[in-house]
Structures are given as C-alpha cells and as structure tokens.
Amino acid sequence: MTPSIKPWFPIRTERLVLRDFRETDFEDVQAYGSDPEVTRYMVWGPNAPDDTRAFLARALAQQTARPRLEFGFAIEHAETGHVIGSAALHLREGPNRPVELGYCLHREWWRQGLVTEAASALIDAGFRTLGLHRIAATCDVRNVGSFGVMEKLGMRREGHLREDRQVKGEWCDSYIYAVLADEWSRR
Image 1 (tube, helix red, strand yellow):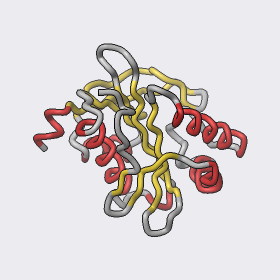
Image 2 (cartoon, helix red, strand yellow; image 1 turned 30 degrees about the horizontal axis):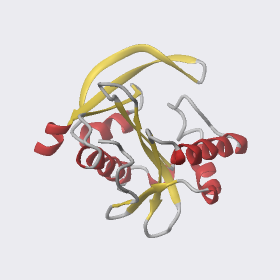
Image 3 (cartoon, rainbow, N blue to C red; image 1 turned 90 degrees about the horizontal axis):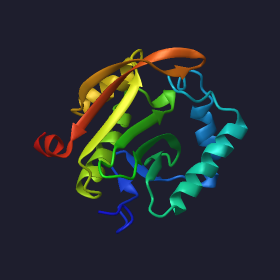
C-alpha cells in the first residue's frame, strides 16, 4: 500500500494530536530541541535557533514528497495546543520496506506516559493504515526512559549494537527493538 493513498492523520489520542509540523511551531520545537537533557542521547542537538529552522524546513519539505516516506509529526498537547515533542515513522523504499520509529519529548512532560501514547498510536497507524510488516526503533543503551517506552509498547529487544554511532563526539552503543504486525494485533 502506498502511504499517500488516503489521509490518515492527524492522529488524535486521549491527550495528544499527532500532526504535521508548521512554521509556527518554531518556539515550541526550539524549547525542547535546545534542552541538553532532552538531546543528551541524540545524534543532534542541543539545537541553536538555526538548527531548529533547518529542522522545520526539512519537515515541511518532507510533507510534500511523493511518495511520502518520512512521517515526522509534531506531538501537540490537546489541552494546551503546544507542541511538546515529535514522533516519526521513517519508511524506506525497497522490497523489505524497513521502517524506524523515533520520538522526542520536552522534559516537562516526561514520565507521564505521553511518549508511549504517541508511539502506540503511530505504530497502530503504521500497521493498520499503511500495511507495514515490521517497525523497529533504536536508542542509546544508557537511555533507560527510551527503551522502557519500547518495552511498554511490546517491542522486543533484538540486539545490542556496539559503538554504532557517535553522540556528542563519543562512540556509543545502541539497542534495537522491533515489533511485527501480527504481534501488535495479538497484544
């Protein structure tokens, strides 16, 4: 199935709206993207204002790509209307269609189940709407919060990659987690 066949977003959950980024999201994105604690285990950040502008420009360009393979969404808090993070499905072309899940959240909103809520909705849409077979995610092995989310989602740890990426000038290990469509439907 081609991801652009029918509109399947924004996605609404109990507390969130997952939607395309807008230029007007700059201040909210800069607020979480510039926080050293939020970006500690990321290959990017902390972001200067120019980094955030470049991120938003890429996000806006990806929205018009056909076929669209990058679904990077703003996580908007439904009650406040503020963007508090991002969640994404990164699709690749090819016979095996590898897909990676990613997410990031403003520190003020940590430990409230919001990333789990957003990621769950995105995984569900990936399997039910896009017809995906497997969704994977990686994180730095020190990022207990991130792999805790993956485990809450029912993803299984498939591997420990040794020094597979540089983060802030240091070679770091990653965990890889994944879930299959039939596993997701049985949970």
